[in-house]
View (spheres, rainbow, N blue to C red):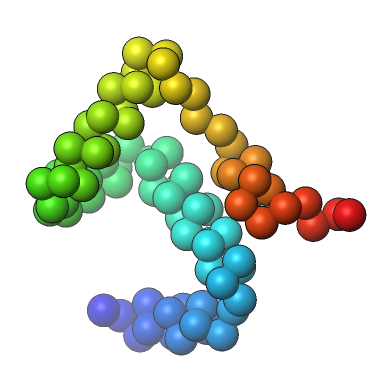
Length: 84
């Protein structure tokens, strides 16, 4: 990896777990919103059980059986409101 990557990783290790999780969510959002990054999914090898679970969840989202929630809402549900 590049020195920039290593520096960023070293800095991320200094953050709290909540901050690291928030960064992961943001990175996933910006990665999945860039069509140029679609090739990353094709290059990453998932274990068979994980691939099955991903396909199941995608199918539920695509069919409307389940609905996604915004990242901020997921963080609020996991960690509670930070304003009160």
